[in-house]
Length: 255
Image (cartoon, rainbow, N blue to C red; front, side, top):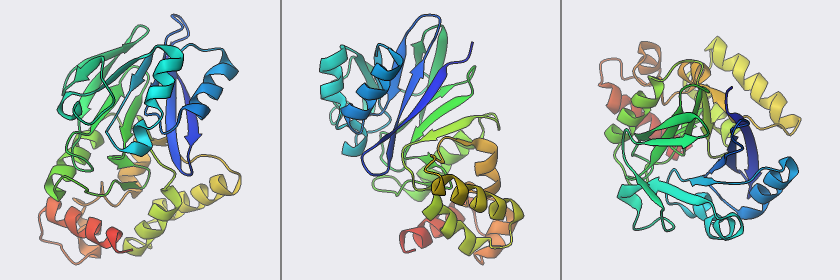
């Protein structure tokens, strides 16, 4: 039985994710921008939290960890490389390590760029990838610490996951990201359709996260930096993929 996923809005535009195994009753949360909404979502479902999984150290992803850990006794797992600036870890993780929720193992992927210690969690059997602020819906995180080439390699790693994987990213930035994407590929029919779907979801107050990886591959300009059409659109037809990515990131930073 696949893991059950609940998207929990936090702060003004963040998301935490509850992941529940019905057979064992185990429940994990990925990132904790604030404890209150997570506690409310747990109580509503009568779930007991057993694990807290962290993608990176930024305050809007970890600020609620201490309160949630005190309230639930859940163990905390995060990147070994970032242990010095994360909340105290019960489990320090690196590339290829496993985390288990019920009977399903998830794989840790190191995806530096937004931060140098950023990790993601891929639960293949349930088709879920928790990508924090690395790969985001219609976008990617700013390069606060890593290089463009580093982030491009991370995005390539994530884009190689099965196309039907649900990308569970950390923010509701999708509509703004889509507006930027349209400046690069205004005639991309898949992008035009997705922009309409995003607008409809937001008008109804529905999250646009998680998103399907296949949709990101077709419309997310940061994943499309290696595509001939996107290279032509930014006037870099003969450039290396990582150089094109760097130019797209530069434009987005100034958008």
